[in-house]
Figure 1 (cartoon, rainbow, N blue to C red):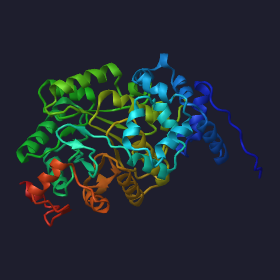
Figure 2 (figure 1 turned 135 degrees about the horizontal axis):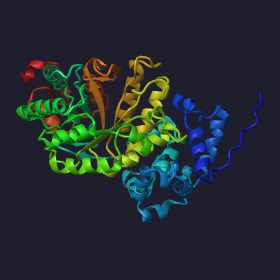
Figure 3 (figure 1 turned 60 degrees about the vertical axis):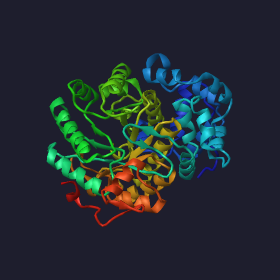
Figure 4 (figure 1 turned 180 degrees about the vertical axis):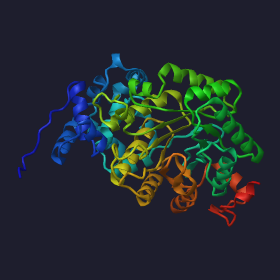
Length: 453
């Protein structure tokens, strides 16, 4: 076997940058499916070396999807604060990595350069970092947002309560909500994926959850994750939504597959700011996930990590309350096994927080992936240590409507105890008033749905 090293030149244009970024990525079945991945570990290391010596200016000047062809590229580029960029443009990608992992670099220093970064720069540095690097750098960044409650404070870990039902049965949704609340979860959002994407069903879900929240004076927010246009119509007709939701892709063509563009998202944002019933100011919720662009043939031969970073660049335009990656939901064609899912989860939360957005995760997998619940619990532990804003939880870790595996309601207590964390402050006070938590731990009442009868 030859031990000769492989030489890859530093990128000088968009095409060569796309190639180097793809080959420098950690092993992902999605990149292999697209035919852009490194063919060996030796080639992957060579690509990382070439990327390490590339300047941030080169990355900025060569977006992976051309500026004139893609509105996501334009949104990312136009959001850059030029004076900040001028201070760091001569840094190499390696310099940026060293800055992020340096023990002297604190949150305020990262905030000072954030607005000078593009999504491709953030993707590039991610590829040079180990799992531990990603966890360490993520832990330095505090990103808060407020809807009715505030997520992201140091010392807190929040959870989305996801009480989906395969028939949109309101009583089943409310029973699952009662169960989740009795385990102390739900401070991030009570968010339901509806089976029926229509105004009537969306309105019924929003009205039922809003009334329940009002009745029990719960410091949280509701959301029905129908298509954004359905939610907009429901809100215009008076449905009581706290947040407006939409899935995002990292290219204009990918967003077309989701039935959205920036003009529509801008309209949704303005509507949410005027008509959502929450106090705000952060009223948008987005979901992402590595591989979605490839599944819609909207990837432009760009690797899935870089496209995921561009999702966060677009999300930042709307100052969201929540963003999460549904990391293992898309399946083994894109993330084959537990190792790849864990790596992608760490990458995504790091990239989201470096973009300055309140980033969480659905630590999940589908039943045809080479993963199990231990893999997901490993990811939960890693990202709780890293300072993820929130996780998604479902009954017993099994979503019976979407047919995938995630974290369970009762996983929250283990993470709070392990890392000495608490729910969002107002929600924690409410849990204590209900007798569900006391002195930082769940009481014997935890799991009693009858509390809310």
